Length: 166
Image (cartoon, rainbow, N blue to C red):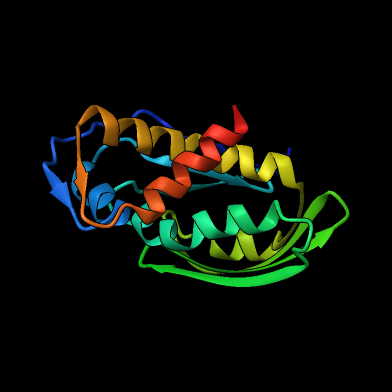
């Protein structure tokens, strides 16, 4: 497979409350804990739970909902943390997604290699399932740590995606 994720097993700190899921994720995972790893056309890209993933969450959850809709045709998104800066242009191609990417910054400075391998096609179900590994890790840690969220919209939607996949 050209696209997959390894969620890892990051250490989770106790967090009493947070503004939302992104804020909780940033607070819950310390620097130096295990990363998630995104494999893009066989190139490993580290995603820090403390910095990269919180930046992704507010767009990732709606994206996963959207690509599963029969009306979905295409979208464009830009994720811009210091160590995971990428633009994805995503289009439906039958039961798959065709993703054209432009990588600006990643851990390990693999941008040129990733840009050489910028196009990827992945089954929609596989794309969603891979991201759900990371969401399952985060929602599990949020529950285990009993984090209270002031705005739980994204967390509730993430949980709904996870429930739907079971």
